[in-house]
Image 1: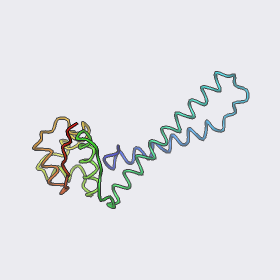
Image 2: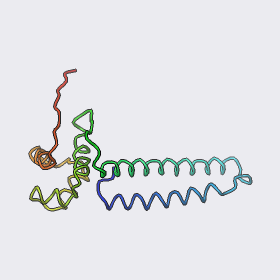
Image 3: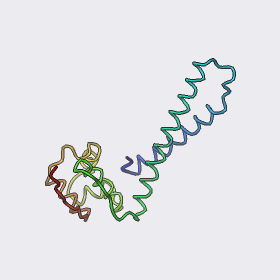
Image 4: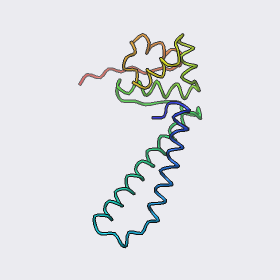
Length: 144
């Protein structure tokens, strides 16, 4: 998941590189290759296409979040809450630095929280982030 403008720029640049590599490989003739080389060539093409698709999905998701048109984020478990908090920050149009300032923290601390998906954040810190982002999380406990 892309969580900031720097990652967005890097992902877009990497997408261009992968697309150029794919275009180069697609022009390479396989007629003189033996079976193993053709299979290897196809595997490279498939791998590049897969990575390109991943980059495109991440870019589209980030751009959609940045547009501010997202009204709801759905998640199925508490394990997805960290990603929801990161996405909510993006939807709210806040940088990591702006969120940090609102919480009285340094930007590096928010970067750390987000890179580890809030693994080391206390519940009170997660609640503070929730409050600053001005989001509502619907609680439901289901006994299985």
